[in-house]
Length: 364
Image 1 (cartoon, rainbow, N blue to C red):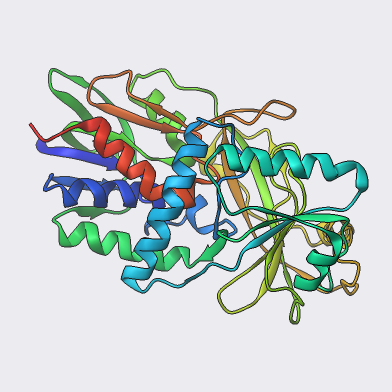
Image 2: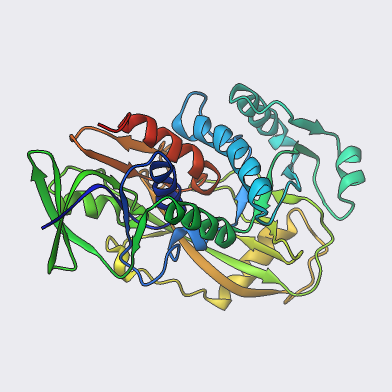
C-alpha cells in the first residue's frame, strides 16, 4: 500500500486551493478527483461572482471567509493575470415595503466588515443604471466577477509546481481509520494510506464521509438554472434582487466579455445521489425568468432569454429553514471534512484553504 502525507479529495476550486496552500508549505500532497477533469462540478456551474460578504450572519464562517477570501482573491488574480473585474453590484428593492430589508442588508454587510456599501436613492441609482426600475438600491463596489476556469487552472499549476500530484478518474469508494491516518480505497482496486485527509468533495462530501465510516450531516441539493441574454444588456453593474428562500434571487451577472446571464432560480431536488443529478435546463422556464427579471428590468424584450446551463448547490438546510453555515469538521483525527460549501465558496476558496492549513498546523 502506497503512503502519502496528505490526500485532498475533490478537485473543485476549494480542493485546488487547499492542495496549493499545503503544497506551498512543503507538504506531500495528492489531489484525488473522481471525474476525468478538475473543476467540473459546482465550481464550473455558478455565477462566477466575487461576493463582498453582505448576506451572512456576523461571525459565521461564511461571513469571515467570504470577506477574507475576497481580499485574497483580488490580490491573487492581479498577481497571476487571471481575468476578473471589480464591476460592483446593485441590490435593488422594487417595492417601497422592501426598503427596510435593503437597510438591514446594508447593516449586515457593515457588521461583517464590508465598509464600502452605499444606500442609493432612486435618482442616484438611475444615474448609474438608467434602465433599472427600482425604488432604492444598495451599492456594493467591491463585488465583481472572475474567470473561474482560469482561477482553477492557476491554482492547479501552483500546486503542481510545489510537488502536488493530481489523480483524475479516481473515485474514493471507501476507507477506514489507521493508527496514524486513513486508508483510502480508490476505484475499488487501489489502497492509499494518508496521514491527513481533506474531504473537499463538494456535492459528494457527505457521502464520502459516510463511506469512510464517519457521521455526516444530511446534504440537500438545490438546482439553479441560468438563461443567457441574446444581445447586449444595458447594465454595467451586477443587478441582484433581494434574497429569496434558498438563494439570492434571479440576478443579472456579466461575464468578462460583457455577455449577460440571469439566474439562478432555486429548485429543491429530492435526489440524494449526486452521481445522478440532472443538469438539463427546461426552455419553458424562460417565461418565469422573464417575469422575474422584468420586476427590475421592464425593458427586457420577449423571447430574449435562451437556456444556458444549470448548477447544483450542496446545502445543509432545506426549504424554509435559515441558511446553514459552512461546516469545517475536525472531529475525527487526521480528517478535515468540508460540508455545505456552496456560495460564497468560490469567493472564499483561498480563505478556506488558509483556514484548513492553520487547522492542520505545522508539519510534523
